Length: 127
Image (cartoon, rainbow, N blue to C red; front, side):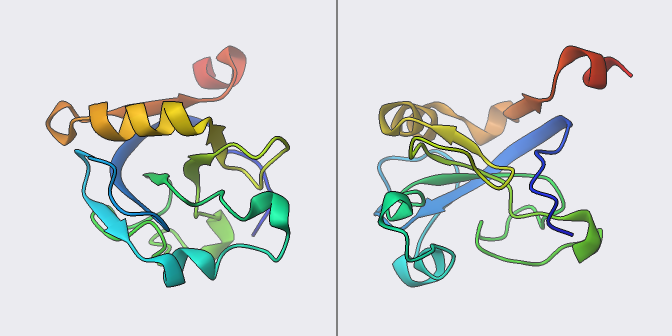
């Protein structure tokens, strides 16, 4: 299922990567321009979306590269949700961050602190 909706909840941030080399990430970092490039459309506006990504632990294998398409809860639950570089328009359920913010996150997020992202509006999170 690809309903292009961002999941609601609190999700761990444990793995990172991108088409560019490691900028000093404290999270495990997978650099593989071919694996990430295969997820990019031919649209030039999105050419740098995955220069840096942080995988959001929604229906994914923790400890696997962000581009691993395993879906432990089944493909009908969606997945492949990342923090990635902002390109100025919407996403297919991901969350975009300006490049400077992404570099800061990669250098700051400490896996020992068990970082998370909280996604969704207050009403849906509290229900």
